[in-house]
Image 1 (cartoon, rainbow, N blue to C red):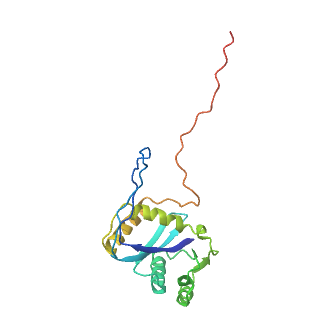
Image 2 (image 1 turned 120 degrees about the horizontal axis):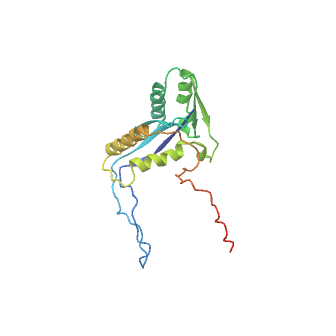
Image 3 (image 1 turned 135 degrees about the horizontal axis):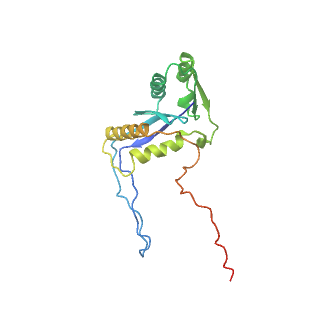
Amino acid sequence: MLCGDELGPIAAKSYAGQQAVAVRARPALRAKQEIDYGRRGKGYAFGALRPATGDVYLATYLGRTICNWIDFLCVVDAQIPAEVQRIIMIVDNLNVHHANDVLLFLLHHPRWEFVFQPIYAAYLNLIEPWWKVLKSLALKGRRFETWDEVQAAIAGAHGYWQAHKHPFVWGRRRRHRSRQQPFVRPTPNAA
């Protein structure tokens, strides 16, 4: 099972990072970011997440077109071993995902099947929270001058994720909690 979607448009611009703000200062300070003018390029990231293993198949394109979506599906199909007989991909109802060319792709690749999520239920597709992870790894706190720099950052973040992948579980992250010792009440002094 795969969860597929697109992220974008992703622009070559400045992305805010985390900065400490003095909350006790009066008047209260606000987080600020310098205004970033200019059009330096933009594009889209196409992704397919395999939640059971944490594998992510990722490619970047200049546009969100049917042709690019078919090309991405062919890239993913080439990377999945041939012994996998059935590939189910969860996608949203974007017109690119159910175009005639996609139906032809499905006829040519019989092991593929698409499952369309209900409208207004993006949270059911597990790649949606994974995009937040990608943005955090690739874009947060950086400034990009060109689309090529953005692509390189996304490729680096994808490589990092693949090296440290883990099963992707739906729901919020479980933080490490120290094991608490059971509370034992001291015996009262009988004096």
